[in-house]
Every structure is written in structure tokens, then in C-alpha cells.
Image (tube, rainbow, N blue to C red; front, side):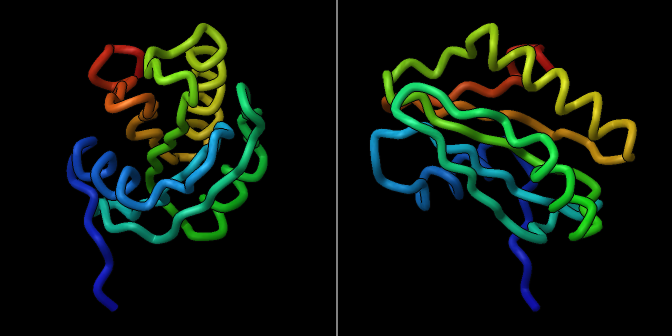
Length: 126
């Protein structure tokens, strides 16, 4: 089976942007990766027009089910501004810490808004 390799945040952003669900609601997508960056699976978790709760339990359960070594989380801001909110930063911190305790690396958290994309790793938030 030929699995897609996600080597950079740009690879993830390109893959996700090309397949992002249509609509005005916030959505979270998670790419689950093996130790070589090969994509093991993808999950999506819809929210509403201006918020989406980070489904910590579901994200971690899927990572464990797939025996993932890493994951990239992404969500959209329908407002068009890809700047992370304080809630985004706190939820990501909790997810990263929980994943780390289970030997799963949160590789990045990407936020799409308008024509832009913010990377928590590039911003020094991970």
C-alpha cells in the first residue's frame, strides 16, 4: 500500500487545503502519522459556525487505534483570520501534553482562514 508521506507542514497544508470540507462551519481534521511521516489515517470533527470543541478523547483514541507516532491537527476559521485564538493555544497545549504522555508527537496544528494558514510550530507555539 502506497501511503502519503507528510514531511513538512507545507505538505500537510497542501493536502488538507485540497480536501477541506465545504461550508461555513469550523471543522477539525487530524492526520495520523507513523514514525516515518506516512499518513495512517485522517479523521474529521465538525463544529458550528464560529467554534469547534477539540474532541481530545476521540483524537487520542484514533491515534492509539492506528498506532500513530505523530499527528497533525488542523482547523479552519470561517472568519477568514488564521491567527490562533487564546482558546486555540490552550486546547493545543492540552492535546500536545496528553499525546506526549502516550508517546505520540503533536507535529503541528494548522489553522486555515481566508487564503492563509498559520502553523503553531512556525509561530513557536509548539
